[in-house]
Amino acid sequence: DVKVTQSSRYLVKRTGEKVFLECVQDMDHENMFWYRQDPGLGLRLIYFSYDVKMKEKGDIPEGYSVSREKKERFSLILESASTNQTSMYLCASSLRRNTEAFFGQGTRLTVV
Amino acid sequence: GQNIDQPTEMTATEGAIVQINCTYQTSGFNGLFWYQQHAGEAPTFLSYNVLDGLEEKGRFSSFLSRSKGYSYLLLKELQMKDSASYLCAVRDSNYQLIWGAGTKLIIKP
Image 1 (cartoon, rainbow over the protein chains, first blue to last red):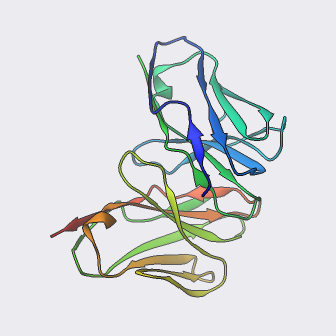
Image 2 (image 1 turned 180 degrees about the horizontal axis):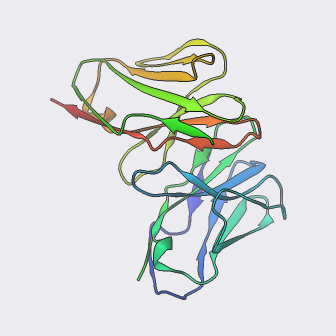
């Protein structure tokens, strides 16, 4: 089974802090994604990557950056956390662009 | 713009059948996915439709009509563990997934 692991289930950070969310997948998938999920809204794509050292902006990249130095690891960085970034963050990976995505367990981030 | 619509919440009885609808308007179409998400957990893949018709997988079936921009997920013999949110997502012409807000399904005994 594919396993996508996110480094934390719950995080509480202060406004202005730099926050790192880590995601690792163990199935040699090419594609990795970061989404945020808020009540009443569908999953919104922040950034994605189709290859090592490659990154593309999704629908809501403002305030975020990413890093993919190794194929299995995709990191999401909040440069200066703000309260409107309080959300559930979901990492996902897929073998190819046209296959299903597998999700990590999510990180619930609260910015105070 | 791109849009996925599904009901916010539905209630059904244990042992019954429920149909969750999804309508979409997207820039191109390269398949439709259904995911299940229990509260506080990750979404898990349920089904994939790219051609018109019905795909059956045990108690769950998914239907697609591309001409109508419409899909449904049919759950039979409902069990309490089926209480979850069901997410509809469409892959557009750029192979990006466009997600609906999800349907929260409540199962009552």
